Image (tube, rainbow, N blue to C red; front, side, top):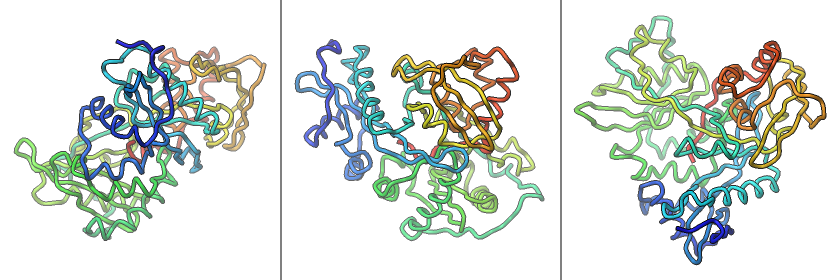
Length: 401
């Protein structure tokens, strides 16, 4: 086994591409198809990769791209989106990930990005680097035979069945509109759209190619498959900008013939179950982490979003990994924040992970206080802090990376 002192971290080159692919395939337990390889390097160019090298062998990898992500108040923040993090099984627990992340975060800081985000394959690795779950992932299955809509549920119509090629321009336009109003959602660059519309075989997991339901203000992309003698419609992506689009698309999805089960990911505050006479028809099958976040620059990040209530407090932020903590005076008036380092005594204290968790509005500060992860003496201070950071709607991940 190697130790971290035998390993150096450097920028990758195109010559490293094959070794990086082999490392990721082994680490994530899959194979990239030829139909996918031509797009992968465009989404996350190898020039943005960092590799850990022992001799001439690549034993670790991380890559990033700058993303634009929506935050509460329909504002946007430039963020470092990290992907492809892998360490060879032969070199685990040698400090290699810490070495790579030290270099990764130094580069992010130098580029002036106030936030780092990623989607994680494991949940126990990244807390020590200042990350926390910032957007939740909620999956449901729905029995169409029990899914009778209430008489009060609108039936707007306006949904058409389209081909993916024909619908592509409208899907892109609708996604952009949805992203602009949805906290946690990132812009989807051209390279990612190319991969998205390629509908590569690995993403199908044995199901059909994509079917498209299109509305002027929304779309649903789904696949059909058969599992355990049941015909299943699996919704791959659902985006609705308006309530009418949401209702119209769900009426079609739950009204299709020869479907025994509809599977989908929905927002934490999706009203679907309350639109049906039998809310038990919507069954929760999974609730986990969709997006992790770390605040890189406390004042820059906190002044980028808006808030629901006024606040005047001092935060003691602990950041053992990057050493970027300290006491910060946070003043919010009419939704707009001012934040700066201060020598004043703090009224609340927590690790920097907590700011990542609260940033998009997925969690309440009071829950973290109950879990002994926020230190606060005055309950009124906690209530004010909680009220300020609560968002109007649940955040959603734009696309997995």
